Length: 529
Ligand code: DHE
Image (cartoon, rainbow, N blue to C red):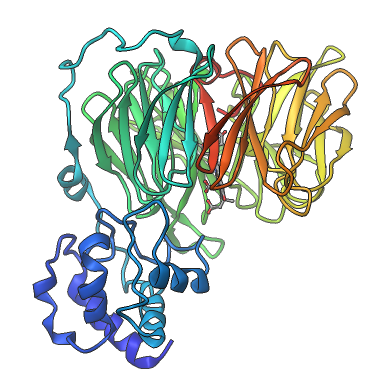
């Protein structure tokens, strides 16, 4: 980027810091440059501060998944199925390029997004208790699916018995991570990469409240009692606890720790998970070698009291109880992709270079290592019983293989060769089969079906040649498997999970994940949690 752009950005950043809702009129000093161009063409939708308004935030942290040349095309041609207009007639190539450079330039300081900003962003469409407790439609409420259509930022609510859509609604821009249900299945909380958390009332088919809990968020987890949601943020570096009834923030937990040199730093949070038997949330930190466990129990166990860095020094660290007390588990490497056994006393974590560790959550130390080559995608791991012993299966995002690990000996008992690296894997307690996609490479249109008793691939489907086929979820009874054709001109395909016969195709706009109320609220061993 040119030095003039940098200078402008720096001047503007200083002007913008701490001013989340700055008006266009307050930056006249930079009238002829890219900042003024941004204010003129972009600010009304993306925010004067680039934090996002109706359109997504335009900060490098939020744009990581968009290549610069693609960004230039979006500015020139607009973005299909969104409000983003085409600017090719109004801006020349150089202007477009300068805008691209501008929005990929970091702000000088991490912007302020605390309690005050979160509360100001909160939108309440329906106060708690004002909507009917009777569903406005008829269906088995435990066999509903939410299907995320990332192509045009919508969600479809699907009847899992008839496979008829019940409702389709617009969401915030770019959802990520699985939507999380309240334990009774009435509400679902969905996260956008821009930090918006929306609470949707399934019984009334209405978004009841929203809050922007971060500027760049990863995912959220809902406590087993349904009272709290915890949001994992990349920006700012923190975890946010929300009261799920009011959608007000209760606590901000800043993720601060020490690096290898002992210097205090803050860390991005990769993801957060609910651990039902432990009544706690477990967070993966991207930049600090620690796993954090945050208790939401009314009476947390003693070892939660205080901020414990050293598990051996537990007694010395005893402090009075605080709300959502945190305990920290030191790790040898950065761990940011997690899988848990069904008891939640063992955490399986993968490092950025593919090292996989098993951590004991109670002893708070490394328990053993796993021998897994490539880059296992532990977040998509599932478990089942094989010859009387529990095994874990994980796809691999670098190599065409599925690893099967004995969860008692921690040995890899089989590596099943697939036709390319996969992303998502699924099964169900009632199904003899596990399904895994081939997400990357020339065979991305294929899905393998593995017999759980022989650990062999018994069938490979290629439902829409040339189009990515990915992410399976089962119905409540495990009789049907739903698969996405991950394309703007995409489909949801329903299969008989026993015969693999196609039952139905529903047109959808780049459907990604799908989430069955029963399997998710019961923490089925065949699905992600
Ligand atoms: Fe995801 C879940 C991390 C890129 C689609 N993804 C998750 C979770 C994590 C994660 C930690 C579990 C959270 C949860 O469900 O609550 N994902 C990451 C990354 O680090 C990565 C590689 C890079 C990034 O920038 O985030 C990444 N993810 C993607 C994609 O490119 C995908 C395919 C398309 C997209 O929508 O962005 C994608 N991720 C998903 C989906 C889930 C998910 C559909 C939910 C899976 C489920 O069934 O539970």
